[in-house]
Amino acid sequence: MLKVVGLALAIALAGTVAYAEDDDDDAKIPAAEVEKIEAALTALGCSGFEELEKEVNGVYEVDDAKCKMGTVDIKFDKDYSVLVISRH
Image (cartoon, rainbow, N blue to C red; front, side, top):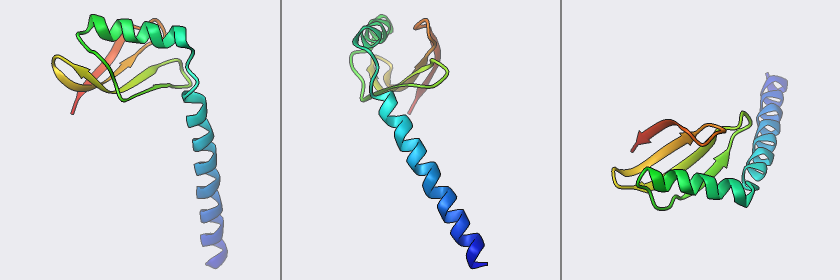
């Protein structure tokens, strides 16, 4: 039983380290891409956001965008077209 718990803990920690490394990659979005996202946000009536991430599949995720409709999360595809807007 103790071996199973230890193995589960080791797997959980390894997953956490790998996830943290992925977050570091998300922070390095080139300025040209950020400018295109900001232009797309402006076209939607938004002005600013809390966080921007680029997922492995090329989807951009904007968290807490400040828009006329309220604070929303928005996902854009690789061509900067809206995939999803979710309101909190």
